Length: 123
Image (cartoon, rainbow, N blue to C red; front, side, top):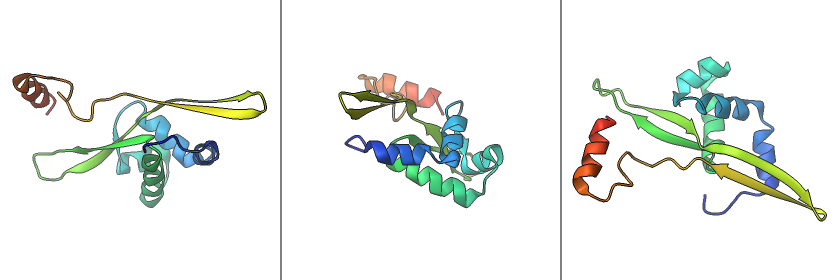
């Protein structure tokens, strides 16, 4: 999302217990939809609906877990690290802080060989 979401939209999303449970679970380790359904005691359709909303606001990241058996699947990781609201001079100000993970291993490397090495190590 290029611009920060409106305060009301974020409060609405975070008021949802399922969305909060997904964020809490994925803040410790990446989890698949099935793992989230089991961990958070919700149906997979509920997981997917909340995941979609959380991704729309940039609070959840999706990565593909690659398996040698060609059974690839998505895992989700929380990108929200802090959310705050302040009342100052008669108006509310909100702030979102997201984690700053690389989108793929080795992205920050400038040398092609180092980039390949870093990507290979993380497979």
